[in-house]
Length: 174
Image (cartoon, rainbow, N blue to C red; front, side):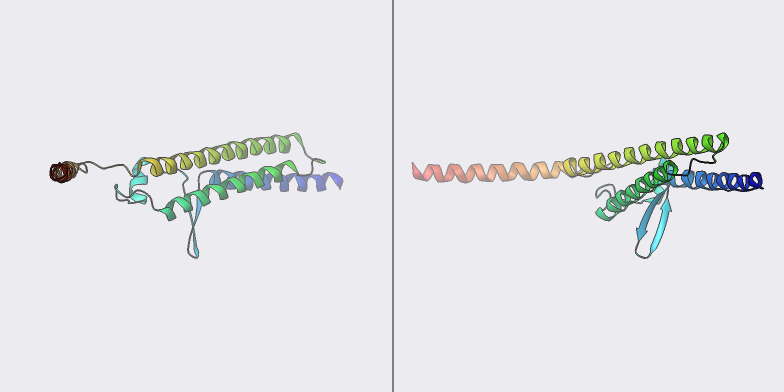
């Protein structure tokens, strides 16, 4: 009878490990964003072909503050989920664990750790992107530097006008 009981615990552990592995794999490739009352799950870093179609942005303005905050919150949520999963794996009862279950838990811990590291890297990448936007502003798109010539012409005219005014005043004073 004891053997039957340990088999059911073993089966429960295996099914729990499989579902936890599936959840870990899905969560490691997804970010949770909140839009009002709706929660969206999206890939942390979509491929370039999808990225341009998912987040249509004008090249001049860059990402909005809300988009950056949502990305940050999604990454932090993913990190907290990973940390919680690692703690749960570390605190499971080690009493009647077979070698197969221990190996599955070790593998799951490794997967969760790698996903936590990946989420931390995504957060660092986001902070680097935010610093670049803060320092340099949004990058110009193709053909967007054309009005720079007229700005230069206007600034030259202003300088010439100011110099003429200075010479006019200094000429009167002498």
